[in-house]
Amino acid sequence: MRFRYKAAAVGVVLCAVGAASYRPLRSYWEARNRPDYRVASVIRGPIVWVINATGTVKPVLSVEVGTFVSGPIEELYVEFNERVAKGQLLARIDPRIYTAAVARDQAILQTQTADVKRVQALLDQAINDQERAQALYEEGRQASAQEGLTEDEGYLYISETELDQYRYSRLALEAQLDVAEASVKQARANLSNSEANLEYTRIKSPVDGMVIDRKIEPGQTLAASFQTPVLFIVAPDMEKKMHIFASVDETDIGLIRAAQQRGQPVHFTVDAYPDDLFQGTIEQIRFSSTTTQDVVTYPVVVAAPNPDLKLLPGMTASLSFQIEEKPDVVKIPSAALRFYPPDLRHVRPEDRPILEGAVASEPQEEGRIEVTLSAVEKAAARQARNRHHVWVVEGQYLRAIEAVTGLSESRYTELVSGPLREGQELVTGIKPKGSE
Image (cartoon, rainbow, N blue to C red):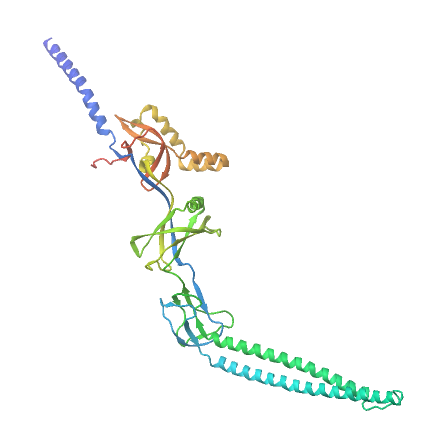
């Protein structure tokens, strides 16, 4: 009997101890299994929205200097990277055959000029002969008229047949003179052509600039029969301005055009000078699209000063097109917008439907729905993408807060509207177990 009382008393004590320790043990267990969240604060400051792209540095103008005539290169007067002035002699082609052609055409011109003088002299003689014949003919008619004789009975110092011979002889010589004068013009044109070819043996720079490429060597023979060989490439005013050609996706072209209209700057770097930040402006958005694997891009030309000649042709530039800038806004950590609690048990019961709706719109399902939407519905869906939920720790649970966002940069996103305040901590992730 006494043993029963003792057993019952021990049981009561054990139950009391278990009941007393249940709450602490439960709290300890819940605290042990509660996630350790990473948090980041809502801050205030400037925000810049940019679109990144890559491009190639090129001169504003690349002038290809070629040759119109053929022959071996006799002399070269410039080297790579040398500055040249407009009209400066760059190279010379062996001029001997072109000099001989000029001498030949000069002799032909002299011959044709002398032939004009010869025909002119014959024409002058023919004119005089015709005038004398005409005078004799008139004199004979007058003498016959004074004596009252008819034309058949009168004096015939010269017949009409002979008179016609003199006249047509003069006309023939006039035609010969026209032919001779035309031959002179032809000879003069041939001489001008030969002189031009001789001048073409002197390769000159058409612009002020810098020789960025030289494609010939002394003694090399050039053949300009079918196409013009390129000898030099001269780039003018490289220190004043360079162009960066970037390929921009079609989805961003509207934003790039808006940035151009607002005069937004473009910042970029090149691998040769990783510590230097260069700045330029959007000079042109070209309409010549390029399609590569169903991706449509448009060339965007950025102009940048180059006073130190650090930007060289062919360099690869990493560009950031500044679309819009706001100097003082409330900013949400972008990681907080991407965070969704992985376990519904850690979320307030009233906020769990938010996560249940998010699960229904997985990426692949969203892609299938996107195809079936009308254009109006797609536009409305895209506008609704600026509505997000961020999460804050509230006791043992996470509480959702709705936020409407605006501009976005690499780490922060503008808060347009929502009950968030500066300094408030938002959940951005979960720390691994065992980490500090």
